[in-house]
Amino acid sequence: MVWNMLLSMPDYTDELIRVLIECPKQVIRPPKKMMAERRRNRCNDMRLRCDANGQEFDVFIRVNMDFPENFSIGLRHCPPEGGRQELLRYNGPHGAFKARRGDQVHSASSHIHLADEDSIKAGLRADHGGEKTDEYGIAYTQALTCFLQKVNAKGAVGFFPELPRTAVKSLFVWADEGTVQ
Image 1 (cartoon, rainbow, N blue to C red):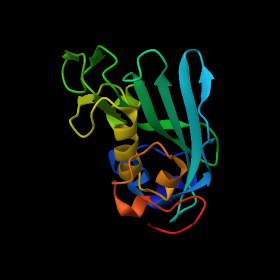
Image 2: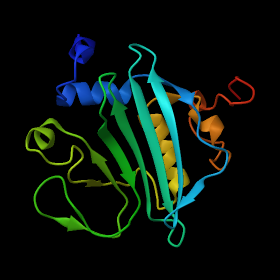
Image 3: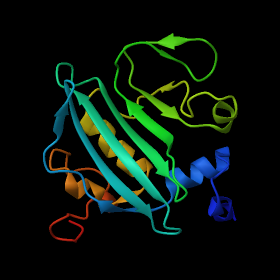
């Protein structure tokens, strides 16, 4: 089983990365009600725990105050032995980025960075390179809704009143009510 790989500092294979991203998670440290301001960014964070194995994850949200379409929303695995590994990042169209395959550089496109085994073994950032996406537009709220669904963060949408209430129902366990609406 893939969970056996987590008994020590994990060897991040593509399969383990996929399982870590997709495992059902609960919010154990909710985001703050108001985003903090740091270096011209609105910022928030929360901690998630995997239902199946107790593994923990940090979610970070950064939105540029001058250009709100420049945002970054990411998932980092926090293994019990320490350290952190970024697994997934959703970005707005912030400008040029290196494509995951080849040397293409895209600009003005929302894109997703996904960690992969080869990048980690090569000593690159785990989420080296990115892929253009039409999964969400240029609004961070659209990306956050898609991101929370992708990382299977049950009940997390209820902590973000700015998110549209038409997203996937399984994400809508309201923080103050504990019920799906």
